[in-house]
Amino acid sequence: MTAPAETSGATKVAVLLHAASVIRGPQPLHPTDLHVIRLWRQLGAEIVVLELLGASGVTPRAITDAIEAGVDRAVRVVAEPLGVADAHGTGLVVERYLRTVAPDVVAFGVDADPDGLADVPGVVATRLGAAYVPGVVEIARRASDEQTPPAGAEAAPAHAFEVVADRAGVTARLALPARAVVGFEGESLVRGARELPPEVTPRGPGAPHAIRIMTLYDLGLEPTLIRRGDDLRGTIEAASRPLVTTRSAESLATLLR
Image 1 (cartoon, rainbow, N blue to C red):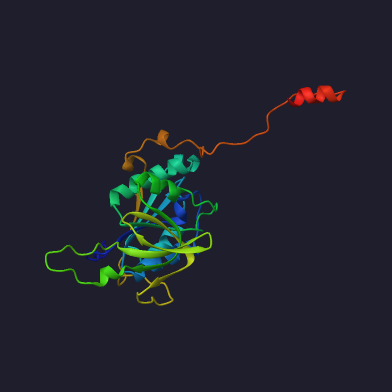
Image 2: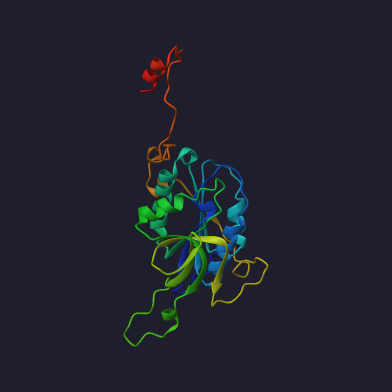
């Protein structure tokens, strides 16, 4: 099996399928995840997708669709403890994998989490010490990237982009730093790059891909590190009180103290 040749100097992008949520059954590729893959294809990036599973034997539906969309590598981390892990434990697993591939950008679809939380990417950004940039609606290469550097000077980094992000209804234009964790909206677009054809086609001429399966031990992690099932946010519960019958306002005031 021959893997497609890597593009020299291409930006390396890791796309977190389902916004890095843990999948327990077959899931289709979310439209926003597909959209994110197409955005980075327009920019000529080298794309690796990551899917997390809390059980073995789950049909690779979403990740197969991602391969058909033209990604370069596809990885699934399969571990039963992920099925009861909180966002912090899941983020630890994702961060450990990302350190093995060292992407220039980590991308996800803001609304691709089946639970509607999209909280793991924030944990990943914290663990990586990277900028967290959700709500992106536009991306483009920075103008400096188009200029030819003088002789003897280093070329502009391949990950130098600028984005427009929605901040509570206010748009902000930002220079995207290296290793940023970037959340894309479903209607986001690319400026200054060629349009892709509407049909989804593999990048290479029929180049076959294999899905790499990894476990926690492949990442050097013990299951007990992530088997917590506690999101650390705390809970608010009514205090238990015995049933008491009051006969006067004075007794009621005493009970409420």
